[in-house]
Image (cartoon, rainbow, N blue to C red; front, top):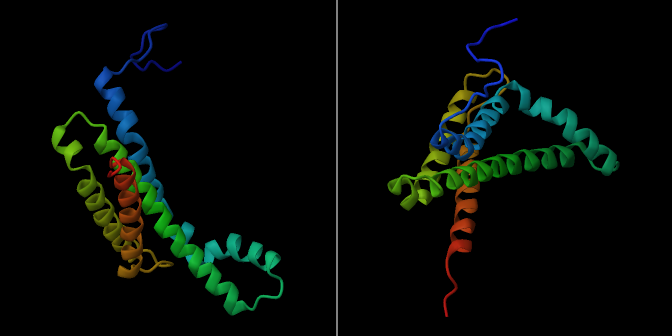
Amino acid sequence: MFNLGIQRGVALRLPPHSKHRLVRYGPLVLWAALIFIGSSSLLSAPNTSLFLVRPLQWLFPHASDATLRTIHFILRKAGHFTEYAILALLAARAFRTTSRELLRSHWFWLSLSLVVVYSLSDEFHQSFVSSRTGSIYDSMIDSLGGLTALALLAMRRRPPVD
């Protein structure tokens, strides 16, 4: 029906180095895209309250509205911390396994820099979304999540001291 320039019975094959790059950097790019999508009104506080506060009301039927709002706030900030911790780990994975010595030897600082720059750009993006606000404090939480994940990873990789 559609001719895409692929012959019948011939698989589209990427060069080996391209496959490795896709495996190495693909999850990082995909996660960054998911963070960007989440920065839209999709995961704004009013929308997340629909699927976070209602279960909380069920779990804690006697909790006040103020308590539920506080728990909702804490869960949202924990989400910031966690999503950027994951971004940092994916960046570290990509940089630590690359064939480029410069990236491999400076994986910690490059990963942390990526997290900080991406979190700042994410908050800048949110400042243009009507249902969101850009917050330097959220960017600090994001960066702390990335730093924590990278520090734990670096400590795990160190040989034990006798």
